[in-house]
Image 1 (cartoon, one colour):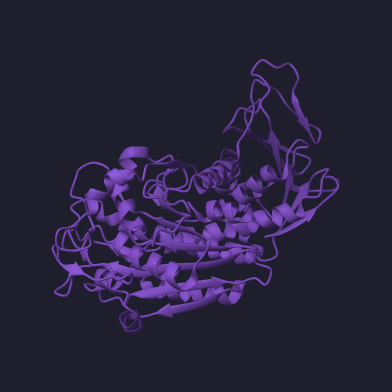
Image 2 (cartoon, rainbow, N blue to C red; image 1 turned 45 degrees about the horizontal axis):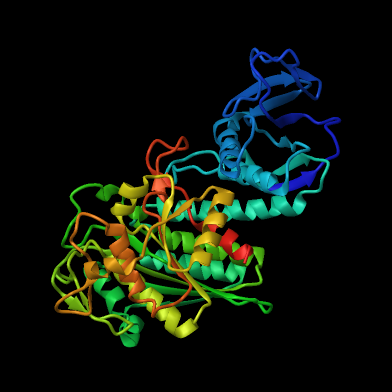
Amino acid sequence: MQIKKIPNLDNFTGTILIPVFETTAKSIVPIEYHGVSVYSQVFYGKKDTHYLVEKYDCTHVFIGLGKEVDYKSLKTIFRRIAAKQKDVFGKNVAVVIPDSFNSNQVEAMFCGLLLGTYNLGHYKKAEAHPFLNAGFEMKYIAKTEFEETITKSLKIAKAQLETFALVDLPPNKVTPKYLANWASESGKKYGFDVTVFGKDKSTEIGLHSFLSVGKGSAQEPQFIIMEYKPANAKKHIGLVGKGITFDTGGLNIKTAGMVQMKCDMAGGAAVLGAMQLIADLQFPVQVTAIVPACENSVDALSFLPSDVIQSYAGHSIEIIDTDAEGRLILADGLAYLIKNYKPDTVLDLATLTGSVVGTLGYECAGLFTNNEALSQKLQESGNAIGERLWQLPLWDVYTPDIESEIADVKNYSGKPVAGAISAAKFLEFFTDKHTSWAHLDIAGVAFGDSEFAKTKHATAYGVHLVTNYIENL
């Protein structure tokens, strides 16, 4: 999609998108634009409504914004228009940017328009969305120049679209090797270095906890390391994303919901998408990211409940539940990152526990950190773009939940309460007491229901959150 500013609609024919703030259902003053009048009896700008008028060889799409609109709502509104009204889009489309809009609102608009091109039917024959046709150029009308903002918004949407696909594609497609290859190709295209450790190299350097999870699968584990190193870097951020490409639960096999377990790599996908976006936007911040990718499957070689395994950090781990596997691969990812790269701040993202869903539902992710400044900054970054976080405690009173009699630590408390907290305490054990680390449990927000598909699907939660945090350091 190309973007071009035009001064007016003289001689324009095609589709015009016209955002409108809400007036009142009883307003006697019609909404007017481009010689078209719309009376309040049929449309007055109520949020989540739109109205089409054909006139002057143009399709005028009046889009209701409500009385006021936040970033997430604005993005959803324009995604809805792009996704559900694509039949009205031809070669010529113009967007009217209200005079009152700031750059964040413009970013949300255009991000939503491109996200609206996403089609969950990856294995169906379907015509491409008009916005994706070669040479398509979208015009916009505004008193202010927004080219830089719109270009940025399209880069955000492209990274999120890539993340949608990584999570939504089936597990026989998105294997650990697929993720490794994706990272390598993205690195070549956007400008970051990628190193991948397979089974042999991972064994050699002692990534035992990571390897234990993948033992039961025919898919070779891939320990993916990405490094973005701009010359003018002022800080160094470390990212770790859980990359379980499918989770059967292992020998503690899942008895429900397994059909959705292709999404158990959504944390890893968010980190991959964030790396693409950070490099694409050329932020002056060094970023090192690790995605330990493997499949938690079942065969004669699978690790067992009551096994004691080793870890890269040198700590022994008693396996209580093989379905608490995400924290095992993150333990090695965190320990390897902190020991070898020494980032100033470390963030990990993972679809880690059902417990966090029971606590927070599907509206926000769980945030765990002992660094209050980091907590505040992450929450501000999330609130600004509609990817909310809520902090939960990491108090030492929860430490006994992960204490083991036979090993240094156990991977599961076995208690029916505070599961997300004990999981976070387990991860904390492998951070070498890093003073600026935060864990984001995104189990409730990474994959879910929405108006854009009939089945659960990816949200790309975390891609923009992490990028927005880094941008505003």
